[in-house]
Image 1 (cartoon, helix red, strand yellow):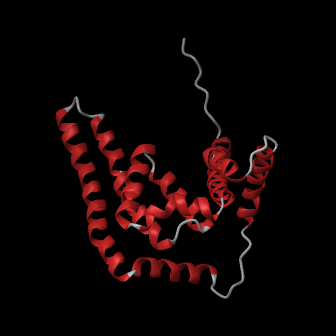
Image 2: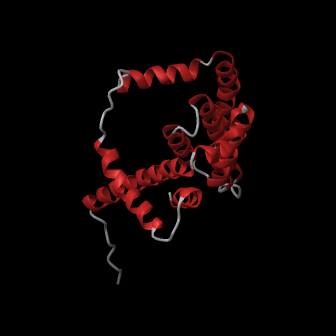
Image 3: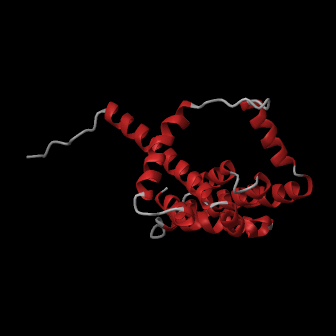
Length: 207
């Protein structure tokens, strides 16, 4: 006698994926809003050391190694740039550091095959290819960016081409949908007498 297997319908899985993506965007928006709430003085104290590209590189590396998700760390960096707390040229080394930090994940995955010598050998070789690719990309591109600034310039030009540089803003419907939960969160936290930096830190933490 076998138990029947419950299969989740495709439409339910699709709705779940959409809900998770929406929740992810709300979290990033909460991070961005929390940084804004902290004020310019707090932002300057938090990110003054990031002006050193090597420090920014290691912050991105360490952050990604800790959370085991380059998507999470780079999304945080994008939110910081969007809020104005972080300059684009400061974000470049941090994103490169995040790419190095994500190499820890594939090495950990290869360790799952450690009991089978041939499997582990192949898995570690594949992980090492990924490691060397990200390391060599940073070794080549970071000095190029520091000497010429062309990567951040190219990114800015690409953004101008996609969004326009005439000063008119495109009203994104997704941004409108995302801002409501963030404003509810902000108003709810204010009910607990939170304001300024404590409010910003709490929003960042929740995000």
